[in-house]
Amino acid sequence: MKQTVHFYRYISMSILGMLGAAVTILTDTFFVSDKLGVNGLAALNITICIFGLINGLGMLFGIGGATYYSISKARGENFKANRIFTTAFYLSIGIGILLCFIGIFFSKTVVLLLGAKGEILPMADVYMKTILCFAPFFILRHLYISFIRNDGSPKLAMIAMLIGSAANIILDYLFMYPFHMGIFGAAFATALTPVVGVLICALHWLYKQNQFHFTKKILPIFEIRKLCGFGLASFINEFSSGIVLLVFNLLILKSSGNVGVAAYGIVANLALIVLAIFTGVSQGVQPLLSRAYGEGETSEVRFIYYRGIVVSTIIGILVFLGTLRFAPEMIQIFNQEQNCALQMMAERGIKIYFVSFLFLGYNFMTTARFSATEYVSYSLKLSFFRGCIGIIAIVVLFSYLWGIDGIWVSIPTVEVITFIMGKYFSKKTEKRLIK
Image (tube, rainbow, N blue to C red):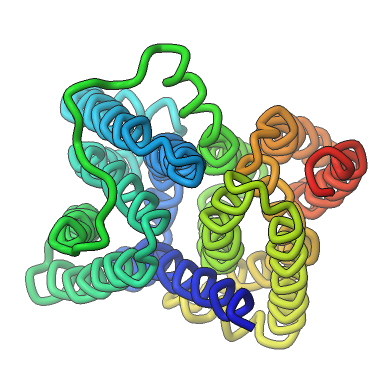
């Protein structure tokens, strides 16, 4: 009974926290579509792929460092655990400053490479520059939340995400309506969200149960590679989402113009909410899996993993059925101009796209299990196929064969193939991983 309560406590708080983060982007989508129309929505959708890189780097050091930290703590290696946190912190700061530099001097070059042109170019440039200037805070938020969750404080991690998201909603409205700050207002409101999150996470150092601290020494190079290895699957999943978004934007822009990009933007942003739930489940079980694995409790690893699959599968079924019933109403929220072509395209797309959620929960849980139990190579294979090689190859082929319908179908196709790969890898590791 206690084990079950512990399980649901971690995943529920992780889901709420991730939903808060997803609402940040969804809020931008709503206000931008209402205030700036199709062009604003297209500009946002082109630049929003940068979150894949920023959040991916945050997960690389956050999930990777926290997983390694949790395993080390479970094995009684306390000094090493603190060195892991210190190393992850310095890596986060260094990469964040580099992205800030790129934003200040090269943001226009970046958005041009992403396909922005004409009326949407100035808006895309402003949004990109603003977000990149706050990259250190986005990355640090992921780092702190991951470590705090692995340090036994999932509630504080959830609060940090939710309060930041609430601040984003309020600031989005103020900046875009009373203050009339346009696309910069949307970007600035979003950029302040991780600042709020980092400040709230700092409260963890005031708690007596805080167990991670800064040290004078960082990890040697080979240990840094191991730290990053634990988070590499999460990085690929997140970063590749930005790459996929870019590829999709370019293909849809060619076949359906700005209206098609706007339609995909609506579907992709609604999908972010569901992805946040699945990510919340997988990140919620990660500390439990790592701790159980570090302590040698293979039966508990089995319990956590299969319970996570059951929860994820139920969520996937409910989401898919809900989409079939409420697709028109969901799209209408973001179609403030009552654009009929946009409405029809997005409705058709979301019904096809969301089939993928019937399989995605299993794929996320299987990848999380491999990452948290030192079977990194299998998690990387699944993530790399699902998020990069597989999806890009299939979407290019399907778009050539069936146009925009092929683009929509490519997403569930990749999830089905990843599901089959996950089953195969699980059978190969079952006897060794979970006895």
